[in-house]
Length: 263
Image: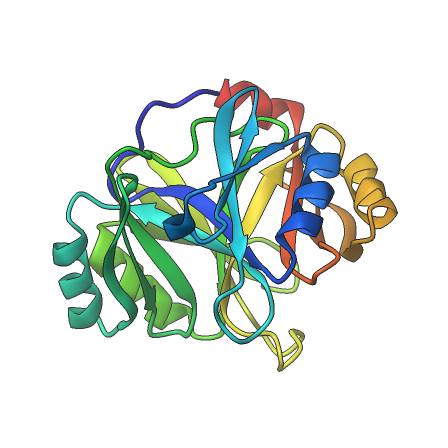
């Protein structure tokens, strides 16, 4: 679906910091059919806009920080300064203070009290994703943390989200769904002892696909890795994969019922 704006408090944009932008263009273009346009202006730092049917769906840029390449979730806000004050008051840490991104908008990066990093976006010329919830575009953002209680308290305080936690497996595994008003805006997975210790708290990006198994096969053919094989879950069928540079993300084929609900 095409969108012309994102409500404050909702995830609106994603981008990838990668050590090899050209390789990322090739991989994601092959997987999702994206057309990549690198901004030629020196001040843009090689930032690349990825489009589907001419609509902005994601960004790629050179990795600026140590650590593995990763996809970043951005949450739209009305006032970046006010939100950063709320982040600090709720126990978060400002990692990158507010900065102007040319004529596109203003951004900042914070770390929540549970350890996950996330970005804020106050739009000007760039609203965020112009196409979502269809094959090759963003369809879900999910927070994975070990201290779920701290994360829930933080995000409900800063963004006004409500949180509903339910048991989703016979082993007692729980899943939390964040909502803003009557709209679902993201999920939270509690990282238990089965998660490798070296995996940090993080926001996971999900892309919609028509066929999860076919997408996982394509990932491998393009030089990526299938980290979690295609698996059935309540909303449909998903897999966790990584691109050739090691950035992880998920692909999700929604069940017919879920697709009808979104439509």
